[in-house]
Structures are given as structure tokens and as C-alpha cells.
Length: 68
Image 1 (tube, one colour):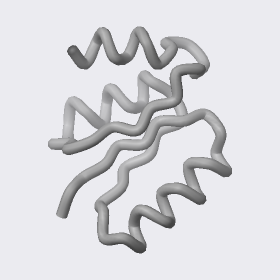
Image 2 (tube, one colour):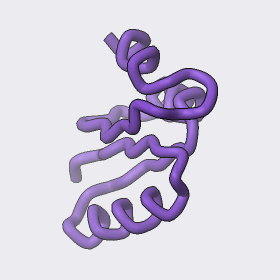
Image 3 (cartoon, rainbow, N blue to C red):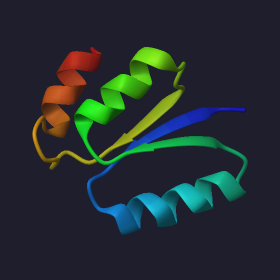
């Protein structure tokens, strides 16, 4: 099952979009901050990342640089 990491500080978006993705058969991990997303990436094999670029603390662009 493909694993998706969804990072967004809007909790309502995290809940709604992750619920839709789970119904479609994806294994979804969620994080409200880039830092929490990094912890998930360190401990899990993720196939796809959905990322908001405006995040508290480290923003999405900085996170992309870290991932790269």
C-alpha cells in the first residue's frame, strides 16, 4: 500500500484530505509541522509527500531542501 505523508498546519485540511486518501486505499501519515514531518521521514518509508509551503517554524521550501 502506498504511503503518503501529508504536512499542513491546517488541522481541518489534514483530517479531511487524509480521510479521503485512506478511503482510496492509501496509508496516510500526517504532521502539522515540518519538524514533525521530518521525524516521520526518519522512521518510515514514504512514497509521496503532500506539503504546504506555509508552515510554522521551518517552511515547506526549507523542508524540501532538507529532503533533497
